[in-house]
Amino acid sequence: MILDAHTHLFPSAVLDRRAEFLAADPAFASLYATPRARLATAGDLIGSMDEAGIDVSVAMGFAWCDAGRCASGNDATLDAGARNGGRILPFATVWPLDPDAAYREAQRCAAAGARGLGELRPGVAGGPQYTLASPAGDALAAAARDFDLTLAFHVGEPVGHSYAGKEGFTPAEVLAFAERNRGLRLIAAHWGGGLPFYALMPEIHEALATTWFDTAATSLLYRDDIFALGTALTGVEHILFGSDYPLLSQRRQRRLVEGAPGLTPETRIALLGGNAARLFRLGE
Image (cartoon, rainbow, N blue to C red; front, side):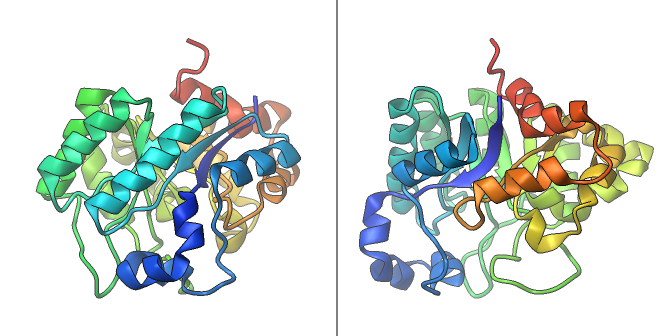
């Protein structure tokens, strides 16, 4: 099984009325104001999966700065999961600055088939913000615990070049959340903003026992030897292939893993689907 643990889809209304959503949401505008930034529907995602030879994709919506837009996006993602024979695993988004409403929306989505919450972001500069050490973070942890959900966080690198979308939770913030909520299943996107490099410290490795790191947007961030280095730092079982489609091509990102130096055939199999299948208990 080839499983892409990090893709995005949108309701068709967002594609049809893009300018309206750009004007309404600063977080969306920060990423999608340029016409070059691609948006995809569920049908687009399935077409990409067929082209890339990908069996299953985790589909995340967008972390809108509004509970109503989150709910509408969730409906589209949940519908995609229900209509495509298990090929799309839906993740829901919530707006945690209203913790009670976020918890209720997580409950609704879990009952409808959501496998997790994400990709969760702290906001954007000049827009609404929250931290994980807050009632918002507590609500996310409670929802994950009560409804058996995985939390996927957008994590940004504290160093390096700037780019649209770099703003995310910091590695230190995600680590502190993992330490406070041991046992919750967490995905730190984009190699956790570099957090795996600290896993050589025994106490950090222990705190990250139920944290996974996806490879989304690797080709924009790191040299391809990150795959061998990352698996050595955290253990092979903690790395998940993610493309960040439609930002990047699923086919090309799969080929990046297949051609990365220093990986055994067994490691490539684990990264490209085995680890994610175990995380999401697809064999049960």
